[in-house]
Length: 487
Image (cartoon, rainbow, N blue to C red; front, side):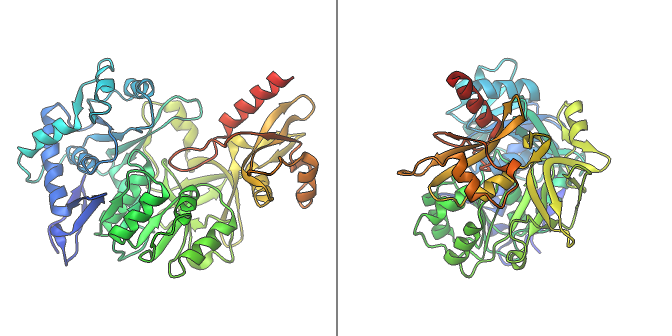
């Protein structure tokens, strides 16, 4: 066994052959070995310490895709500092709001965002290029991490929350390790391709998962079809996870994906035909459906052998946790990988964590074998005429209707019914928007109160960038506004 790579106070053992000389990560033509990463992390840690970063302090990291983010995360872990990656899709005003909330000891920016970062009041800013230059002159030997506890916060994942205000998900060193160690993509894989950005939980999950398996993680600058397939052709990874929207982009290419032995998906809903097309394009790969959240990590897995008999399910609980349902059908997950809480938000933390575990906000049901089926979001459920309607259930019934490019089901206010079911639809070119009557004929097997009473054409269905989840609140707001204007 070669020298271990230290992540906080968790050891990632690197098996022979390769050891410290083995490839740890790539991005385009750039690459770094485990040994080089180990040294770079120690060097960066010393520079951060010189800039006042100590145990319990937070480092906000606001850069585009770069291998430096990997050594930056490790450097923070070795100091016992909290690493807080921030989305590059946010404008300066939004990041300034996050900085005011997080109160970082240091903000690290790339050159593109440096001027904006320097405009933030009361925040010390360092350019990542400056950080790397200073680090190159530092000793690369190990950092004394005796003060770091497995319960200490490791990473702060930032979400906008339902109110639009930032929420910081605090994840401990132990939770980071547990989330990625068990139920991983596959034991013994040669390379994992990560399609998530490194400001998202999913990105760091796959980075750490690859390293815990002693293999390389291959990053992409953006998750478009050509870049992902180019990375697969160049690096020949054996495992990949793509949200359904990214798989659609990848399947639209004619790239060589033959190296892939594991091709997973999940996070947002998708039609059965995606699994069929994956099987046709990747006949030698195994596909699993995964279900998780920043607050709890991976919660459930539907294995390849279970796909045929449990279509629509997200699987059964991972080995380190337990899934149960509240009397209202809300999915609750308990286990040691759940977050510490939301940073400085006791009320939000109390609403998300109780004595039973993490309250996901997802609604679902389980069959007699324990397979979980998600029916929608608690906050997005439609209350019409005293009945509850799951938008996801209605969307699944409509999705295969000819002439529809994209769709979302929402509830809009109605004086008689409280809310009515509304279909927001993007028609395919050359196709008309279906009428409510046409939908009723197509949905004859669905209870009448679940069938859309209103159909609205929209230019697009807004979705979250990293996970492709439908932004129903934004759709509802725009539809309600348009209906008010039209009256």
